[in-house]
Length: 287
Image (cartoon, rainbow, N blue to C red; front, side, top):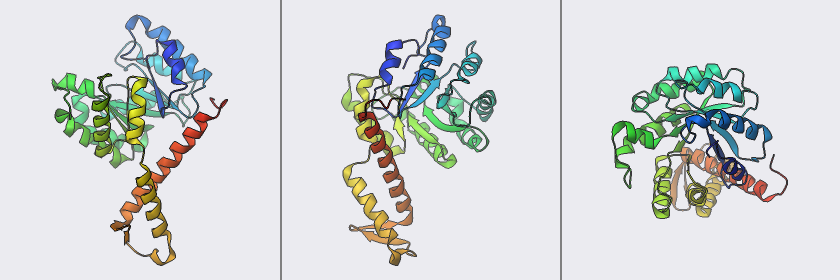
């Protein structure tokens, strides 16, 4: 959401999304940076976003506004700060050091959107071991800009970058969000790209318009059949007679304990989504 747009920020409080990114960077003109920062500070302080994580994308530290953005947000404590154009582990540590005044609950998310970041993705992910780093967000438009790649259906030119980033995130225990889909009129294309992101292992997708939310939610939410099978696997492995068994046949499929872990994660996601939906349906719970 552009931080310079008060109506967009207000609308974000009622959207069926898991996180709201209030953008002080690309979506805000230089002449409006200071006023947008003040608006974001007021919005985060006022609250009202309910279960949605509130993330603020700040300006880079190589700009006149980045350090001031971080300093202004320390007192209002968003759920996360999203740092743009991070290219090295040292960049992660610089942002982390400036976030020292923030409470421990405020995480650091970073944009993976430079060519250099792809070649240093392992060291960047490893920086999570001693910093607030908690998530990657793919900046696919900026990667294309830097490499002169073309954003086509199927994203052939970006497949190596996407795959490497997901692998690095999983290695370090980080969440990772896929990049945006630019064509607001192409619902079928958005659905296809969401499904591709799910197949790659992304946790979700960043979006540029509320009209895209329903498609992304459906694509990244477990299906009823997946939930039923996951619960069945958990039940079968929980039986006393299967306590020392490494592999079972469940509903005609061979299932190992590594699949049990995947099923437990799927059920945990389902329970979170259910709680969020219930909260969204309850009036007066926007805190």
